[in-house]
Image 1 (cartoon, one colour):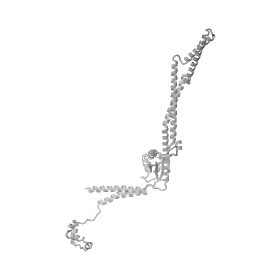
Image 2: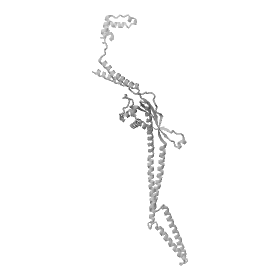
Image 3: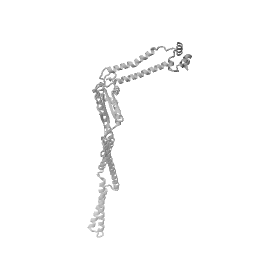
Image 4: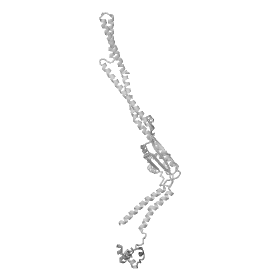
Length: 412
């Protein structure tokens, strides 16, 4: 309806008649008045497009931001950058647990397994400054990676610090670690195939040495505490034995218990003999007072009494029994201390032997499933990938800049 009002009554009438059929529409003839009226209703025609300064500035920015850096980078990558050769080495940390006799009789068990914690330690060691310093001292990384001249982007400055060398190491030595399988794969880049292989082999040797040191430290930790307990038990047993020896030397008695038993037996025997002599005296006293046998029996009884007194005097007079009991108590205490020290020593020795055997059964070692390879062709630096990433990055920067510029222009 709006179109019919804009065209006027005559044009609207012609438009209505045009709906009848296609044949009738084809026979309609437009008059100059109708065309003029339609042109006036449509308005003035658009002016021809012209290149404006902002278009030239946009094209210039494209040349400066994208095209020129890409061309310079391409010239550098294919004309200046030196070829790099890769050497790959793969390894993992394995731990072997020797099965006991019962396990062997009961059935076969797994002898090797991966140690994830040791692999994590090794992975961090491969990225450490200590390894880079050791590798530099062994294969002279500074000289190896600064051989080519005229490539300041991909080569290393021989006068750089150890921190610079570590950063360059992260670029030239790519380490990948699969935590599920415990496998580590290292790719080493150098400007000569032989240099890459040499660095990879040295890296494998240093990793094996670190694992050996780690295994030795683990074995030492396993037996250190038991060894200290064994040393303490030895010192305690030595002290107990020295105390028993000092007691024997001081009291001039090898075994007080045996001596006391002999002394008591001797006194008991004399007392029995004294009783027999008393009985004999009583029997002879009823017969005759002047009987020589009676005199002899009394003399014998007197001698026995004197001997008993002399034997008892050897261990003290009235306080003899008390001194004897104190001496026996001291000796028994020393024997108890020595016996306890001996048992503690046996237990500590058994624990030390068990810890030492356990440490020997558990062994860590580095298993290389891919030995260092030697490259035949150069595949690095990845020129097409670098150039493609550069184009993508610069294109994003240029696009964002253009959008920001036009957004600011529209706000004015």
